[in-house]
Structures are given as C-alpha cells and as structure tokens.
Length: 98
Image (tube, rainbow, N blue to C red; front, side, top):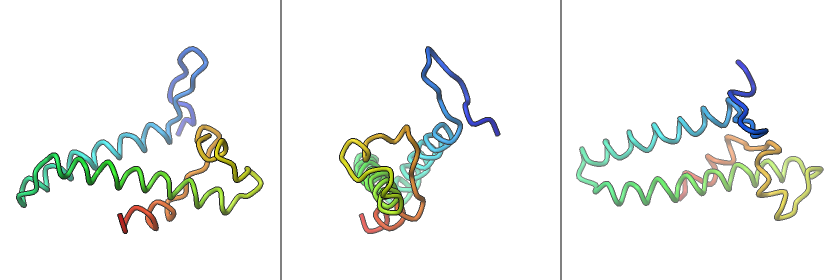
C-alpha cells in the first residue's frame, strides 16, 4: 500500500487517513439505514454518530499521547494529528460508553 495517496500543493493525503474517513462515512450510512429500520429518526442517528465519532477520535489521540509522552502532553500536541498517533483501543474505550 502506498503511504501517500495523492499530494496537492504540498498537502499530502495519506492512505491511512483516506481509508479511515471512508470507513467513518460508510459506518454513518449503514447506521442511519439500520436506525430507520427499527424506527430511529435519521436526525437522532446523526447526533449519535457525531458524538460517538468525536469521542472515539479524542479517546484514540489521548491514549496515544499517554503512551508516548515524548511527543509532548500539550494542547498543541493533542491537536497535531498530522504528526501521527491514533490508537484503536483508545477509540473503543471512549467511544463505546458514549
């Protein structure tokens, strides 16, 4: 797999990020369809998807920074996702309870 999918004006779109975004989009579509089947309005499912996805991203980044303190435990380091660092089980730990 190529690490960089495409580079536009010096901005690299990485394959991992592209596939992650594609997965989130597909998950949202399937969740809304399944919600409609059991009578949950699309607006309510959209809210659930938004908050769960946000919690999963925050949790995955937080666990990465806790495990790798050399990257810095600052606010700027937390938001610098382009430098790498999301952990799957951090997303699970925070996303599921939400």
